[in-house]
Amino acid sequence: MRKEKVFVYEFLSGEEAGGGLHADVAVEGLAMLLGVTEDFSVAGFNTTTIIKSRIEHLSGEFESRGVNVRRASFVEGVDEADYCLIIAPESGGVLYSLVKEVERRGKVHLGPDSTGVTLTTDKMKTLRLAEDAGLMTPFTLEANGVEDAVSKVEEVGFPAVFKPIDGVGCEGVSVAWDEENAERAAGLAVRTSGNGRVIVQEYVEGVDASVGVIVGEGGARPLTLNAQLISHGNEGLRYEGGYVPLKHKSRREALKAAERLASSISGLKGYVGVDLVLASRGVFVMEVNPRITTSYLGVRKIVQENIARYIFDACTKGTTPRKVKVKGGAAFRKTHTIIESADWKVSTGKDHFIVCHGKNTKEALMKAGIKI
Image 1: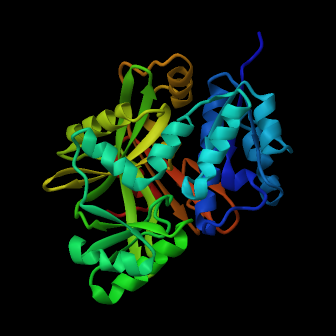
Image 2 (image 1 turned 90 degrees about the vertical axis):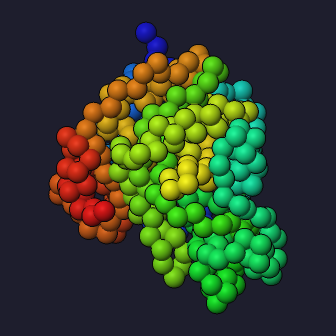
């Protein structure tokens, strides 16, 4: 019996140009690619990917997991497949362009369509959609250029968060605690933005979290509530990793908020990530990632069913899982040193990404060397 062909493409791993993102983001992309392709292979699909020449020595990591590594172009990979799944940054229209090409070539994308990507790439549009769905969002203003962004702080107040309007992860995001830092924070966001458009947002104090959601035709099913570990530095915010599941008094409210938002946005399907802040005054929606997110690497370790099968069924049959069973805990992070206790790891050389699984979250965090 012929296996259905799935082509998984991760932009930073497959694009020879390499993109303009920081090098440490590349190891996250590679880790997501390895995890997703492994899951599709285990689920019984003929799974193929392409990786650029600089990391061609890692082909064995994929092949040992039953994944085919091809020396081909993106278009060739799409044409040879029955289904495609794209992992790419939203910034600069990269994800949109790749998904649009998949659609143009008549193939099914196992993720949001180009409309869904458009609506969620623009952070301002996403926040408006969240408000339309009756959800809480931070007070946010849009700005164009550094001077305009700095002027918006008068209305937003300090501390203020500056973000590229189409940024990915923590790239270009920073907090200005006072007037002295505002111009620097605005400049970082503007430089990172592809078009100079940024948002200036009230700082919401709370727990940084995310929810992985499976979206089908009939609605959405949240999988887990995940903790995000984010550090503050001179060059802005930095995503360090996370752990799952996150136990919090607002867990149920957070899962419902993610479900409501994901099911209300046109064009979303498959796996998407909803970023939240769990504050004392409620759950705030921050943004929606219309793609596989880094947290997937922890979620896949504790969800008892194969998430790749969830994704495929949601995108081809419109169905979502009736019930999600989880077991144990998982912690994941970037590191510059090999951690022998890691259950799963991938390396680009000096950068490593590890995932540690335990019978509970505490054990997983200890194995990963994460203190909270």
